[in-house]
Image (cartoon, rainbow, N blue to C red; front, top):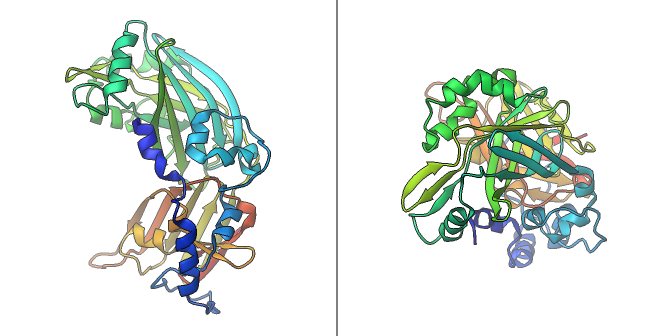
Length: 380
């Protein structure tokens, strides 16, 4: 099992989910909140839902015809039923765009796209100077030993016009010559530094990268990568998106070697049918906002909270369905990233936000509002 599967295998709901949900229904508080204008975090989650309700908004067992013929990498991530959903059909984009950057070729095969989130299948064709047998040996043995491995590259995203490789190379090659690409900090921070691309609009938010395979015939590493932006004004489909990818690092017998001496870039135009819902709530100095798509959720609150960290906010957030059922976000998401601020000597955050990807594609047409504590944020 490679690291991609290790990081993604928990996406599928656990086998005991139905039993756990039914038990939660029997013990849930039957009283409904009748004063949503009062912001007061709940002391416990109302897990008043059945597996059948969860199946309405998640792609657990749709049993429909395949609507999207996507790569098996997406099937591994979203489950075999994901391709049977209208959400996937609206988000799917067969990209098939390549960029030759000297001795490296990047290719985006397919994508799942909405205004705030993008999943991409990215191929990194290694230079001819990199021996396929050595790469295959390191790739296949990386879980068994610390001596052989292929370190992941770092990917940074920029919402920008088309960027020419030759122009970037001319502007940055002197800097590249001074960098040690085997250093994890170099790979992590170069894309976020004041390089030429950063001046054009770097996308900030929650991102991730997982190994998806290696083809020794073409000497190509494949990755599943994603980004969910947290900028209120961001629309990933409004302009081209440029990816900057640092060199992967090949470790053989404990020695690290970058596969090349430069990063690579690829620009494409994200396209999708809009499925993103947004909403806000304001009362007596308190403000809350939510952005919901089939792939992700973003929630922010400000004006004084009863949260000590962003995790409290994530755990206090739920989705309210059209039939009144309430689904805790914690049951649907894959971790979270976030930020927060507090006044001096205050144990509670004055403002907080979190971003997270869903375990499976969410049917946003079934969601009426996002609930934070005892307030509801209507979506449209």
